[in-house]
Structure formats: C-alpha cells, structure tokens
Image 1 (cartoon, rainbow, N blue to C red):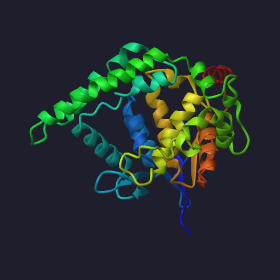
Image 2 (tube, helix red, strand yellow; image 1 turned 45 degrees about the vertical axis):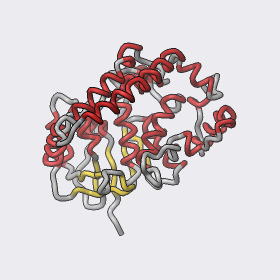
Image 3 (spheres, rainbow, N blue to C red; image 1 turned 180 degrees about the horizontal axis):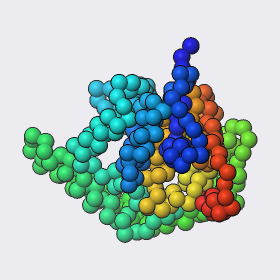
Length: 322
C-alpha cells in the first residue's frame, strides 16, 4: 500500500513556525510541497526559516512532469534526492537564468476581477513586447522577423485593452451579465457546487454554445497545442473564473499587490490534486478546493487546519469576503 501524500499549504508552514501546530517527520505520511512554495518563500524576508520547517519535517517536493516540448504531461513526480534547501537553490538559479517578469499580466487579471486602474493596463502591450524581445535577445539568429511579429501583435493587444477599459470593470455588472444580479453565487453551498453555479449562469451562455467544462477552464476552445488540456491548468483557470464570479473569492483578487498570492492559492489547489490530502488554514481555499475536486472527481481530501481566532482576526476574515 502506497504512503499517502499530504500537500501542505504555505500557511501551514507559518502555523508551524508560530508554534500553533506540531508537524514532524512520519513514516505513514509524506509531507509534500511544490515550487509554488518557493514562489511565496522568495517574497519573504527570511526564506531560510520556511525552508527549515520543510527540512525538519522531511517534506518532499512534488514537481510537474513536462514533455520534450515543455508541455505539461498531466503527471507529477516526487523529487526524493534533494533537500528543500537544494531544491530552492536550484529554483533561484533557474529563474535567474531567464529574465522573465511573472507579474506582466497582473494588471489584466486585477482589472477583470474588478480592481486596478487604467494606467498599468495601457502599458501591457509595451511591457509584453519588451519582455519578448529581451527573452530572445541572445538567440543565435536574426531577430528581425521576431521584432516584426511583436510589432504586429502590439496594436491587437492595445485594441483589446481599449475595449476592456471602455466596458469598465464594475464587478457587480460583470456578475449580473452572467445572470447573478444578487450575488447568489457567493452563497452557494452543499453538494455539486460547480453544477449549482452553472445552473445560475448557463442561461446567459445559451447562445454561445459553451459547456460547463469550457466555461470553467477545463476544456478551453484554444488548447494551445495540447490534445487534452492538463487538469492542473484547468484548475488554475477555474480558480480565475471563480474570482470573477465571486465564489469563495476575496477582495485581494482585485489588488495589484496581492494578486500573486491569489495565483499561489490556485496553484496549491492544482498541485494538491496529485495528493491524498491538502492541508490549509484558509477556509476559502479549502471550500473552493472541495468544490473543484468534487466536480472533477478528484480523490484529494481538502482539510482545514484551524487555530483559535481572536476577535480582530475574525473581523478581518469577514471583511475580506467578496
């Protein structure tokens, strides 16, 4: 019988550091983390203390498997031969080798969630063009064709941005356009929650012919070269849709300085799908994971780890609801 893999959210590491829980190395469980933890740890002032926690509980990294064309295969593997410190160092070296700005689309994501402002959004095409040209600057061939393609794409993006700005980003109007004028989706509970949400919005989608799987990002029309869209990417897309709809969403999804945390939550749910369970202190993450896993028949058990909350913490939690 295989040993259960238990994925721990980043906030579980925080609870361990603060002494609220006591995880330890175990023979009957493999504690699991992913590179998404490194994305969050990298933003911390003292990365070492988080790596110490992972090291002390003998946690193992779970990594997605890519094919020869760098496409996600749909499978994942455990990296058993390296410590969290070694994996983190490899991660830092890898991202240093590629000068890629992972925040480039943040203004777009924040805008469609009902936040942000026009300025950064209008800079999207210029920033994207600059990014592409910098990434290809060291390639050993004439870059004229690449520069011409970038110049062609730029006005297309500008036009898209202008239309977005013209339509505005009132999130209540967006949700009303999907048939949820009263915020009903935010209160969906019980079984088959994704199906319940689809029942609310599907009348507004009848003329489009879009299916539930397509709408929630599990079967996009444009599969970008994939024959079957990877479940991990589907979960990432589904989380983005849920932010727009207001299902177990938080106001931080509309804040430019918090959107990276929102993406990390989605990635943790995606990686948790490869495990027996996922532990988190985030009630909304756990509820959203349960809804997604149930919809896609994923056997992972989302488990909420609670600590005694102060009155001020409870008020903060309530204030962040969307």
